[in-house]
Image 1 (spheres, one colour):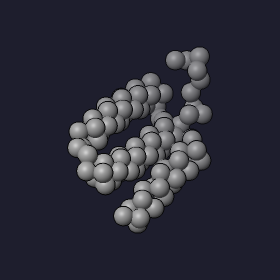
Image 2 (cartoon, helix red, strand yellow; image 1 turned 30 degrees about the vertical axis):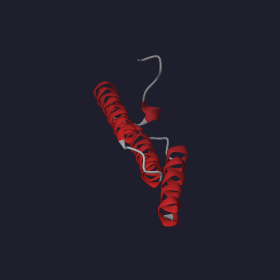
Image 3 (cartoon, one colour; image 1 turned 90 degrees about the vertical axis):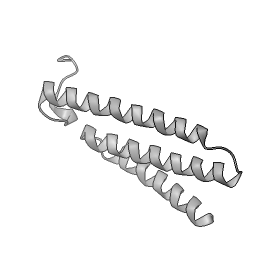
Image 4 (spheres, one colour; image 1 turned 60 degrees about the horizontal axis):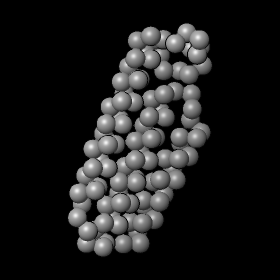
Length: 96
């Protein structure tokens, strides 16, 4: 059990590290956010299994994280169609 806790904490820390260090492209930030969400889902799933709770809340969390990922991909597609790439330095806020 302790191995899973350490693995999930290291997954969360590595996701936050990538999110804070790689801010040039929107795709990389979206992937790191999804990695953080998956690590939080794993932590919550292990916690609920440890205390023998039902996993209904974890399924609701997973549904909302999928919706968040679809919204992020829609923003990415919209940004690529209007600006040509996902590089943050290539567009101006006045152009939007």
